[in-house]
Every structure is written in structure tokens, then in C-alpha cells.
Length: 504
Image 1: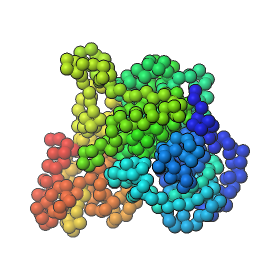
Image 2: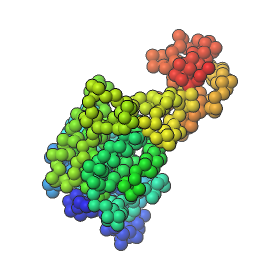
Image 3: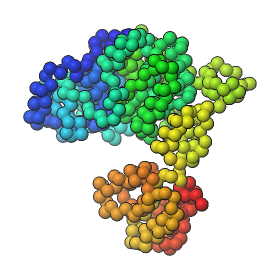
Image 4: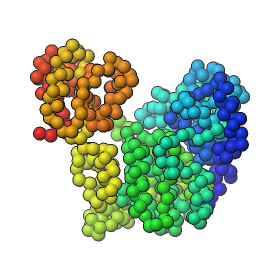
């Protein structure tokens, strides 16, 4: 088993256990408190449990700039992703070196105390370019400009407790716990598999092939922190992983969840992932094609090259002390009823089958068949539960502001929908621009309801929400704002039928 990155597992929870009561008392008296964002909670947890060894806090300015420009900490150790505590200008103005800041989860649970080393204003253009290649459509660059605070706080962490999770407690193993389990089971060669997607037969095949080639066990180590916007939720994915793990020979594979906030940083992120897996005790790491890449931008250009990640991780192989296992795409051979690496078959005279992620989502949406050669029936059942076909999905019909005076339109739409049935609950949602009411709209839609409501900026962009109006941005376009109620109702019904929500 490899030593942790830097030679020591920075398990701050174990290190600070003897002073926990003292830290809790200090936290209760503290006047400087920062409520952690979702990304910051993920980062803090991996600082606290040693997954980010050798880090024991958030990067100070010197380390931050060294990571950006040299892919190393100032100590010389390889580190490729900046781990920063971003805050608002107002909060930053309250801080000085040696200040003690209580870090809170959900504005309520004290999880750590940070001792400030420095407060600095990053050049976000430089960070975007150096860390993520600068494309404004890159998810991490978008987050940097649109979400992250304008100041960073560097400092060391003293741990009070790990962030609280109420789901899958038995699967959330820390690096120390996994390493101890590997030792007790005498696993000395472990190949780790990173994923943020559901697993299917091809994934099972490639991990088994990696284990066979390396004579190793398999650690299925999926990300359950923050992933790419639009990804399948981690609860659905974990149910899939729990099903998949049954398909390995007994004693060959283990499932553990990783509370990582992905940046979708391609090659740099792949190196980071390898470091994290080494800290968790893995000896080998599968690096996939376009590993941790967000795909293409709006111009259809890939953010990263297909094999950039494999090449960069391989270039640091000697320093990382973890062996890279390149992902080789496997494809199904229907004539032989087996999977094989695509680079080992003659495509000119061999039939192959594959279903892309986009095609899979389309089949789930439409209720189309998903063959057993692609995925296990139990996995498909789980995916269909969370991704019902269009006739069972919810929707919201949003009436533009110029239609709000026509009270009969909502009544007519509701009455029309109710006669169709289909198992949905239909409702006219009165909201008066109350954000607490409007934030429920996505939940109603996910539950399969059909909503009718007036326009609000808080609903713009919600999946399966469609604007009705005469303006340019309308999804259901009217000839004029005073079009008759019956005409509007018919246009709405036919639009919903065209988009698969109703079948007649």
C-alpha cells in the first residue's frame, strides 16, 4: 500500500480529538463565523479526513499561486487544483492574520476552526486560464466568475467533526478506515475506479479487466459531492452501485463513497483524483478517456483532448507513486455475446453495439427499450424509477405576464388537464412571487405533477417548465396576448402532446 501523498495521512479528526471540547467551546463563543458553501463543505471534509493530504487547511496565497503556475505546492509536492476558501469582500474585511474563524455547516453545525494566515484577492482570469484553460463556458470557470467570492482566506484547520451526512453512513469510509480495511483483508493491490455516472455492464467489464491485468482488487469510488450540473443525482447512482457491486466475484470489489466537489478540470483534475485515491490506499488508478472533462462548449469544441488526462497523470507517475491504468473503451460484440476493448477488434468485419449516454437518456425519457446486453434489468429499473418516461413526468405551464389578467385561462387549462387523467396531480399554483413557494416548483415537477402558474424570474430555466405568451422567449407562442382561451388551451395541449407528456 502506498504512503499518503507527502508521507503522512493528515487525519485532522484523529489529531484534534483530544481538544474537541475546547474547540466546541471556542466555537460557541466565536464572533467570526463563516457558513460553508456546498463546495467548501466537500473540500473541508477531505482536508479533515486526510483525503487531501498533505493539505491541512485552505491554500495561502503563495501555495495558491504555485499550484496555478507550477502544479505544485511551495514544498515542491505535486498538487494541481487550487483548494481555496472564497468569501465575500465584507467578510474578508473583518479578518486579519491569526484570526480564528468558526466554520459552520448549514449555518448551524460547527465543524472546524480556521486560523487565518492571509487574506488575498485572486486574479480570477489567471486562475481560469491556468487551472481550467479559460473557456468561460467551462463549469469551473463559470463557478469562479458567477458564484465564488472575490477574496480567498488561507489558513490551517483544527477539526471539530466531519460534516454531517444522513445518507449511506456505512459507505462513507475515510482514508484511515479504508486503509485499515484493506490491511485486515490483506488487499495489497487495489485498482480504484472514479465515476460520477451510473455503472453498466461495460463499466463492470473494464474494472474486472483492470483487476485481472494488475492482479488487484477493485475499489468502486464514486463521487457523491458536487459533480457536473445535470448529472444523475447521487442517490439514484448509489442504488445502482449497490446493485453492480453484487455482480463481482465475492471478495473482489468494495464500494466506498467519495465526498468530492468535482471541478470537471480534465487533465489537472485527473492528477488530483490520482493523489486522492493514493491517500485512500489505492495502488492503481483507472484514468478514462476525457477523464473529468465536461465535454464540449456551445461551439461544439472539446474542453480537453481525449487523452490529455492519461498523458498528464503518466508524466507524474514516479512522483505520485500510484500506477495509471488507462481506460480502454469496451464495446459489445453481439455475435459473440461478450465485451471487448475496441482497440483489440477488427471493426471492418466485426459487428459491435453501444449505447451512448445521450441515447440512454433519450430512451429513459421516451420509455424506450434498454437491452440486457447494455445493463442489468435491476439497474434499468432503478434508473427508470428516477427518470420516468415523458408521459409520467411532471411539467409547469407558465403564463406570461400579459396573460395574468385572464383568470379564465388558468381555470380552463386545469379543467382540460383533469379530464385527461394520466395519474398526474394537477394544480394552479398561486405564488405572488414568494421565493419560498417558487422554490417548490422543481420538486412538484420531479414528483410528476402538472402545474399552472404565472410568470416569475425564479422559474426561468426550470426543467419541464414552458412559458406561454406572445413574446419572443415563449416556448408556446401565441399570435397575440388577447388570443381566445380555447385557442390557447388547444395550443398548450398540442405542445404537450408533441413533447410526449400526453398520449392520446
